[in-house]
Image 1 (cartoon, helix red, strand yellow):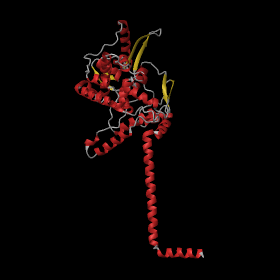
Image 2: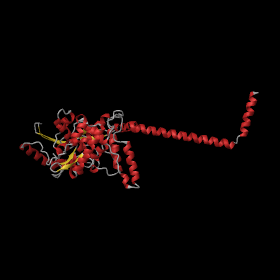
Image 3: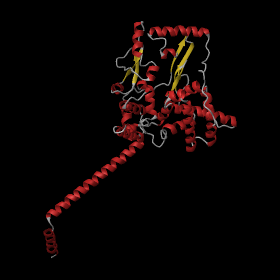
Image 4: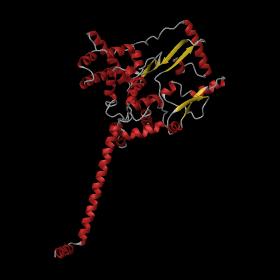
Length: 427
């Protein structure tokens, strides 16, 4: 009896509904489910992108796998798969860009290559794609000369002063640099973070470029980080970012360099701070040439020795005169880090503008708690006093000068260089 009643009720309900109405309802439900699925997928993608910009998990996997295949081995004799850099201030200053000519000149003078680096296929492909070579870059170039008994009698380096490692940099300098350039670079909460890309800046730069197609005023703003700026200082043509392609090359190379020791970039990010401070170009002076790095500029522009600066900026001042000296040195270091934006303008053309910019950042640093009020106020009442002459170099004996001058002349001759070549002139 129940089956009969229920069956008749269903038949009656089906006859009372328009099949076209039911079909429309079915399509509506399908469309609704599709929109729900699409929104869920977009939400999932958005969550993934947000997590990736914060943790760099996928980037760490991709680039650490990529750089695992990048290596080199020093083997006897010349190798055939070596790529020489063509430009870049660092490559030119250290002589890497001139190696093909040097080797040819030395071969013509009966020298032979005893050992040379042989690249892996991964490193060769990475460079062939337009990127810069990945290896542990040294902050300084130098020359040592030994007598026949193996005793050194001449030694030179360029730049002469540099931070040996991250531990050698006063924490006050590190904190100030991060406040100016990249607040979260050393954040330990994200050990896989890619230090080459700051996504908010990158998005702003892309938006500015897009809006610049309509109005050039909107093209301001870049996506630079300490890592990409170091690539620019060292390897970009003329030390400049000439276009979008060069910016992407800097970002890709800096990303690969950040992960060359594995997915954890904690140690590498400290190395980036050191490399940046040692690589920042800070104008030039007659009688010396180009000034590279904050430690060297501190001596050449202000006459302040690096060892003294490190001691003063690290130790807490106990006396008023100690606070005054710390304020003076801190103001000098801060001004140099800021002058890197436009070195020639701030350090040579318009020092009043550098003074105003430094004062502004002293107030900002004080408000942010990077420096205490006593140091801020003391630094604000300190003047930037530039050296009028290049500080003297260490004295050398006449005999030593005579020997090195002869060897220097020989080097110039066999390498077919002019006597004014920077890499030789700085020796």
